[in-house]
Amino acid sequence: MAALIYLLALSGSATAKIVANTSLHPSVDPSIAAEIIVGEPLDGFVSFSIEFASFPDFAGNSSTPNKFSNNLLNNLGYLTGTKPYIRVGGNTQDYAIYNPNLTIALKGTVNATRSPDYPTTIEIGPSYFDSYTTWPNVKFSHGFNMGGNHDDRQWATLIQTAAIACKTLGKDKLYWWEYGNEPDLFPTSAQGPVRPANWNESDYVAEWLVATRAIKGVITETCPDLLGNDTYGYLAPSFAGIGNNLKAPRAWADGLNTDGTVRYFSTHNYISGATSPGVTLQGTLMNHTRTRSSVDTHVSEFAQISPSAPGLRQIMGETNSLYNQGKPGLSNSFGAALWGIDFNLYCASVGIGRVHMHMGTNYRYASWQPITTDLAVVGTKAPYYGNIAVAAFLGNLRIEPVRIAHLDLSSNSEGGNSSDSAVGVQDAAYGAYVDNALTRIMVINMRAYNYTLNGTGNLDTKNPTPRKTRTYSFGVNGFPNGREALVRRLYANGSDAITGITWDGLSYNYELDLGKPVRLRNVTAGERVRVKNGVVEVRVPDSQAVVLDFGAV
Ligand SMILES: *[C@@H]1O[C@H](CO)[C@@H](O)[C@H](O)[C@H]1NC(C)=O
Ligand SMILES: *[C@@H]1O[C@H](CO)[C@@H](O)[C@H](O)[C@H]1NC(C)=O
Ligand SMILES: *[C@@H]1O[C@H](CO)[C@@H](O)[C@H](O)[C@H]1NC(C)=O
Ligand SMILES: *[C@@H]1O[C@H](CO)[C@@H](O)[C@H](O)[C@H]1NC(C)=O
Ligand SMILES: *[C@@H]1O[C@H](CO)[C@@H](O)[C@H](O)[C@H]1NC(C)=O
Ligand SMILES: *[C@@H]1O[C@H](CO)[C@@H](O)[C@H](O)[C@H]1NC(C)=O
Ligand SMILES: *[C@@H]1O[C@H](CO)[C@@H](O)[C@H](O)[C@H]1NC(C)=O
Ligand SMILES: *[C@@H]1O[C@H](CO)[C@@H](O)[C@H](O)[C@H]1NC(C)=O
Ligand SMILES: *[C@@H]1O[C@H](CO)[C@@H](O)[C@H](O)[C@H]1NC(C)=O
Ligand SMILES: *[C@@H]1O[C@H](CO)[C@@H](O)[C@H](O)[C@H]1NC(C)=O
Ligand SMILES: *[C@@H]1O[C@H](CO)[C@@H](O)[C@H](O)[C@H]1NC(C)=O
Ligand SMILES: CC(=O)N[C@H]1CO[C@H](CO)[C@@H](O)[C@@H]1O
View 1 (cartoon, protein in one colour):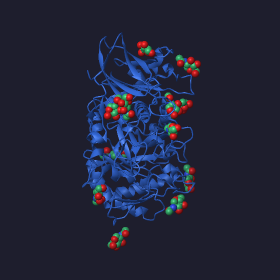
View 2 (view 1 turned 120 degrees about the vertical axis):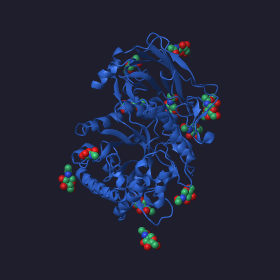
View 3 (view 1 turned 180 degrees about the vertical axis):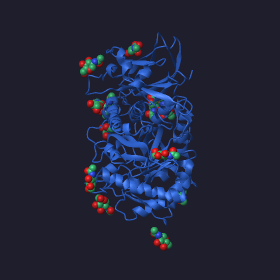
């Protein structure tokens, strides 16, 4: 509540309404400002989690670095002032067994019964770690194998890889360590249980403390310069979710942080599953109500821990749209990019400090495909454009820290007002405050507009379905008449588009300049809007996101 009252005292605080351009004209709700909540993102808020087994594909190695990936990371770094933090982990970190004689980086065997998308039997060799050297100015967390995969080399792997990882990463490249991915699923994992059914929080904590102390022992011998509080610590507990056998608050109460080594409370989230019944783009992803409730469960969970952990920040250590690597046509679509903006900014507004969007080679929800394989062509994917829009909205977090306010549009959202719970809210808006002043507004119109899909007539040039445009009005108290905002749009032909996406007229596609921004001539940029009588209005077509930037003019 303290933050709320403070925010309302800021100059130019925003109230919001959407006036839909249809026969329905929802009224303005003057009490909306009272619902504003606010959070402060950490630097590198837009970050990634890369599947352990896919990391060599994404990063390359010192003789063949993946320059495309590096360009995409640089684009985000230029916008937010810090290149994304990279968490190297995921299910495959708990399968990785070290073989000092392996001459290739990683040898993986896919067992389609366990997962068709990644190897479930893995050896890594010394050259795996060479992939940590290819991207300048990037910090990494290395995920150690806790699950073990029923391989008796697990403990030897831990000791040997701790030495190599600490030497390779050193102070400049080390973010934090991680021991175990989603251990709350170890007794029940769909890819094969690795702990007995009665394995509980105190068992987990006991194992975690023994192993992290062993890692510390190796670092003491091998990398003694990495033992300070600013260099030695963990992302933990990296649980998969809220409703599993093991509960994070219980693990915390059972002494997870006994050694004071948990640097970020890392939690994982997916909105739903790739093959879960009833999943749709509009209902599951382009649905602010759904996104909000999904994130709010994590906020409530952390509220059970934070009173006993002053200063500890919560991060999304691994997250994306639909678990099991995403659903084709949904997770790789422009609609998922819009979802990603809403998800990330809602996280920022409720105090989640950093969001690591997960990806792996051939994953449907990946921001980019790092190499060409039998299953997917190298390229920048739709979700990446959502990452760019978030980064641009946040601005340079090192020079100008921002606070992000969630502007509640629920009582004004045509086709989805707060009393229509079957639909959910399909508009989202956020305010970015720099030095206590409203500086940018993000508007996300998440009404699906199908461009190519059957049944909508959009490919039938005789009978195209028109794309509606809504007008969003924001009260900006204290801004004089005529004050201008630059308008930047995240554009695609429809929510189902998987190509042809631009941010402010720029393409980051692989085939143009290896992921570096290229201005396209067929999309306009440089549009401005003006404040009139304390209100700024912007028109946003269905399936588009727009940033109004008062600081750029
Ligand atoms: C590695 O190769 C050496 C020499 O062939 C052999 O002695 C050693 O047992 C091998 N180690 C492993 C872990 O396979
Ligand atoms: C480095 O990557 C290239 C290209 O993928 C590969 O041919 C080479 O074997 C790799 N080097 C090592 C040491 O793994
Ligand atoms: C693949 O995984 C299934 C389920 O764990 C197992 O029964 C089967 O033996 C595995 N196949 C191979 C070839 O390892
Ligand atoms: C967890 O399991 C262990 C061993 O099975 C048992 O001793 C302990 O009491 C259990 N702890 C909780 C919190 O249930
Ligand atoms: C490092 O962190 C631990 C645990 O939070 C604390 O007890 C200790 O005083 C810190 N050391 C320094 C040098 O700040
Ligand atoms: C949007 O999400 C809410 C909350 O989960 C749900 O009640 C509603 O049915 C969803 N909308 C659609 C169209 O599925
Ligand atoms: C809000 O939703 C309710 C229930 O669907 C509907 O009756 C009402 O007309 C809607 N109001 C607006 C302003 O859209
Ligand atoms: C878009 O296409 C899907 C699949 O054909 C359909 O279910 C949905 O109703 C369409 N949405 C719109 C807004 O036309
Ligand atoms: C579109 O229609 C064609 C022909 O009826 C059909 O084969 C295809 O599966 C449909 N695609 C989608 C996405 O519904
Ligand atoms: C987007 O629509 C424009 C205009 O209809 C068309 O020229 C362009 O090819 C479309 N792009 C894609 C990727 O479908
Ligand atoms: C602009 O051109 C690009 C590349 O030719 C294309 O993919 C995109 O769909 C076009 N956009 C529009 C709005 O026509
Ligand atoms: C406020 C607004 O954008 N109004 C427009 C709604 O759409 C009609 C055409 O359908 C326009 O004439 C209005 O200007």
